[in-house]
Image (cartoon, rainbow, N blue to C red):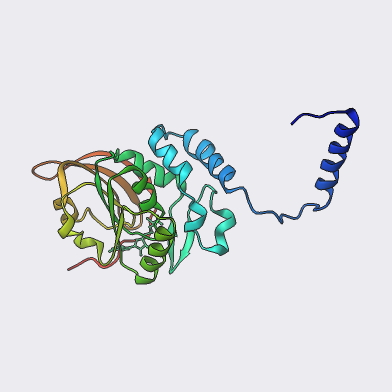
Length: 239
Ligand code: SAH
C-alpha cells in the first residue's frame, strides 16, 4: 500500500483506532484457526521433541477444530486432550505427533489404526501414508468421523465399525499399526497383522500405561521405546 499524503496517513491511523474501539474485549470475530494451528505446531510440538518435518507439516495442515465438537471448538488447539462424547477423547496434539513420528510413516505405507474416535489421528496419517484403515467400536463416533473425513475430501482413509482386537484381516498385513485406546497387553492378532520389520505404537496397561513402540520380527517383536501416557481403555477383549 502507498500512502499519498500525510493527511491520508492520519485518516488511516484514526480509522484503525476507531476499529479497535468498537468491540471492547468481546471476541465476536471468528478465531484465526490457521494462526492457532501454527502456534500449536511451534509451541507444543517443535519446541518439544517433534523433529519430523513431515509430521509437523501434516499437523499444520489438518484442521483439528473440525474434529472437535462445537462445544469445545474454541479449545481445539490447546495443549490437552478434549472430550468428543460417549466418554471418549481426542488425544492431545503432542501425543498424536509423538505416536505418528515414532512409527515413521512412509508415503507408500498402508497403516492400520485402532480407535478412530474423532478421526483426527486418521487424518494426520492420511497425509503421510498411502492408505489408512481405521476401526472404531462405537457406531456413533464412527459415523461422525466418517462425515468429518468425507466433508474434508480425505479419500485414502477407510473406516470400519467393529472390534479392533481382531484387526482388519482382509487388508492385512500392514506396514504400520497405531493403537489409540489402551489394551492390557499387546493384542496378538495385531502383531500377526503387522509386516515383519513393520512398526507399531500401542499404549499398554490399565491403571498406569506406557506407550510402547515395537518392531515386528519373524518370531514376535522387539520393544524399541517406551514412555508413560494416559489413554482411554480398549474395550471388548475377546475371551
Ligand atoms: N484416535 C482418536 C482418539 C481415540 S480415543 C482420535 O484421533 O480422535 C479411543 C477410541 O478407541 C474411542 O473412540 C473408543 O471408542 C475406541 N475403542 C475402544 N476400544 C476399541 C476397540 N476394541 N476397537 C476399536 N475401537 C475401540
